[in-house]
Image 1: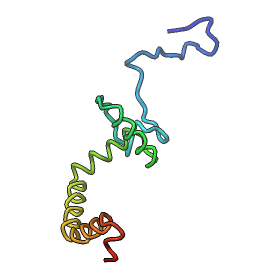
Image 2: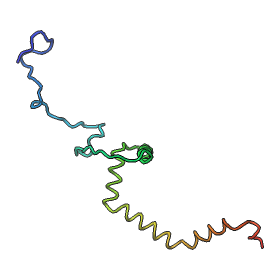
Image 3: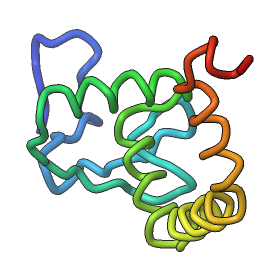
Image 4: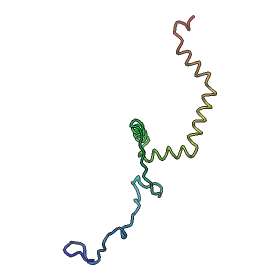
Length: 115
């Protein structure tokens, strides 16, 4: 196909239709690709406050929302989250008396301690 009257396009130009277009992965700087894997777009509806919390936390970590959510899912499915919750529960069970004592001393009026 020849495009006459168009500067720079001669007989060697081939049309660029859907079949001739190949998608190239960006080599760097594009959050759509990570570790050579194409990402899939998901859609979800969440409460506005949850969305704001996610945006703020992602920004704090220097992540996009998608990468932050991906990290949460990975942590959850790998068992990391469950192990962390179990560790926290064991810690609280072992030290509950100390927390109770500290809480009780804060609730006791100051004059009652001296008596």
